[in-house]
Length: 88
Image 1: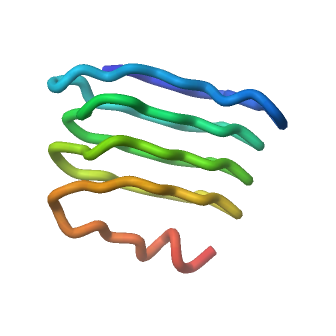
Image 2: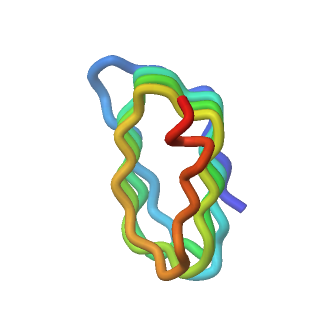
């Protein structure tokens, strides 16, 4: 599991390379630009505030919770549930 947490920046982008079998967790970030390169197994995104997240295609599921004022760009093969994302 690759965990990216508590990233904060107004200008720099955080980039991480992911291999095919790794699961990714991105949490508790504010004003960050996050780029994930490679095809992750799954992704769990939670508690982001004013962030931009860009990810290459995800093999499995993507779960997004409690994100506010974010731009999230990704592709995955399962149906993306964004109920909590839309309620904010």
